[in-house]
Structures are given as C-alpha cells and as structure tokens.
Length: 59
Image (cartoon, rainbow, N blue to C red; front, side, top):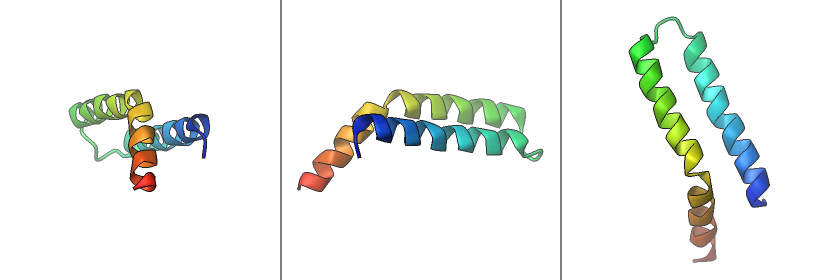
C-alpha cells in the first residue's frame, strides 16, 4: 500500500468514525467535540503512523 492509498483510507475511516458519532443521539456534544479534536490530531499524524507501520513490518 502506498502512502497516498494509506492516507486516503485512513482519512475515510476517521471520517466514518465522526459521522457515526454525530448521528448517535446519546453522544454529548462536548464529548463529540473532544473526539473530533482527537480525530483531527490523528489525521494530522497519518504520515508518522504510516512510517511506523512500515518500520514495524521491516523488523
């Protein structure tokens, strides 16, 4: 899997998480906001995560 493919599928998975949380009426809006911030940070570090996965496979 290339880095672009990983980035696209990773972004899609994170977006699906947010959509699912947004559609759940039991989720408190403040908790949703905190989860959205966490997901945004995870998205920002996707190149680092991709590199870590590649390094893990090499060992």
